[in-house]
Structures are given as structure tokens and as C-alpha cells.
Length: 172
Image (cartoon, rainbow, N blue to C red; front, side, top):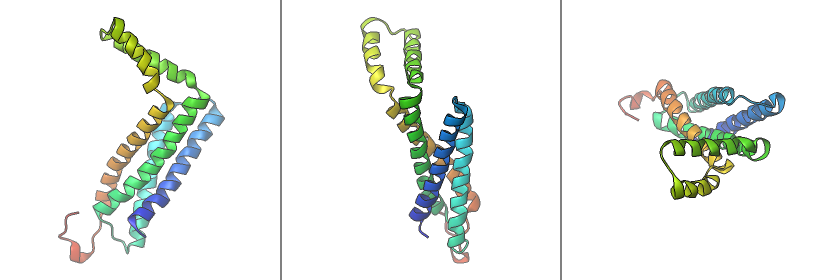
């Protein structure tokens, strides 16, 4: 099993499970709590990365390097992030578009408190709806999940690292 194959396979599984959980919350509770979704998503991501690393190590005669662990973590995190990004796009675009308008209003209030006035505030008011969009939040979620996954993956790869006896002196 290659790093790419392990990462893509378990990343797809992790992404689909995370996406299914998010939609389950949306349609069962009708008002999903974002902090609950974020916390459970983090645990699902952690579990997906750990499982992928352990499975790769099992198919690789019990050996895994940090470099391989980081590669697997990248793919798992990327696909899980794409799943969550899709969910947020769907949620903000089709379910609760008012949340987006509230975020835009909150941003304008922050700018007014910082002293923006007159023409520059009007220019910003015209630009905010072009920037703060469902796609913007989706992309932010993909990168945030990727960052979080790489941090978790680094820690797990260091813990799970095992080299063949002939390579014990290597530093990966």
C-alpha cells in the first residue's frame, strides 16, 4: 500500500463519515450547534488519521516513517476538509443564508468601531458581500481542517514511527 493510496482511501472514508454526521445533525436537529459539530469533526479527523496510519503500518510490515505519516495525514485531512467545506457551502447557501448576512453586519460593526467612516466605509460595505460568501467559508474550512489534520498527523506520526533495524539511525 502506498502513502497516496492509504491517504486517499482513508481520507475518503473520513470525509464521507464527517459529511454524513454533519448532514445528520442538520436534518435531525434542524439547528446544529457549530461547536458540537466542530468538536465531533475534530475527533473524527483524529480517528481517521490514526486508523490510516495504523493500517499503513500494518501493510508495511509494521514500519512507518514520519514522512510517510505526514503524507497520509495530508491526504486524509484534505479529503475530510473538502467534505466539511461542502457541508458549509450547502448550509450557508441553501439552509441558513441569514447567518451569512449576520456575519457581514458584524464585520461592518467591527470596522465602524475601529474608526472607518464615510467613503471608505461605503466602499467596504460594497466589497463585503463579494468576499464573505459560502464559497469563502468553505475554502477557509478546507484550509483549517488541513492545518488541524497536519498538526494531529505530526504528533501521531512521531508516536507511531517505527523504522526497520537497519535504519534506526535515520532521522525522518
